[in-house]
Length: 85
Image (tube, rainbow, N blue to C red; front, side, top):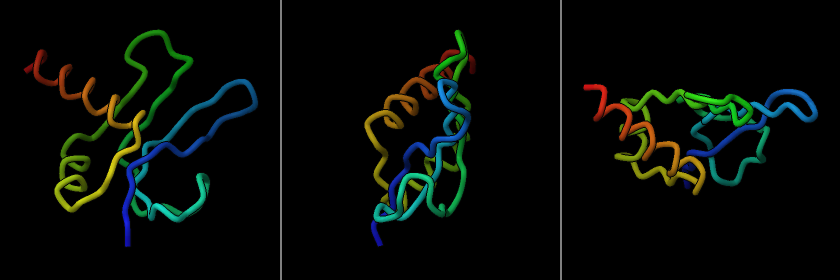
């Protein structure tokens, strides 16, 4: 089974909100998922994403492939964690 880390759209029309989920790559966007590892709110001005880096690293270690957007969110979260700690 190919596992992907990608965005799952939530929210209302014209007010998107996304959950970062680990899912089977063949599942549809709003379909079932294995685990939620964070959130992303593109409408927020600052600090618009929240990722559990421990869970993300665990899934990446198991071979999960992040989407382009999720990969950029992971890079940004790692950079923020390095500067904070």
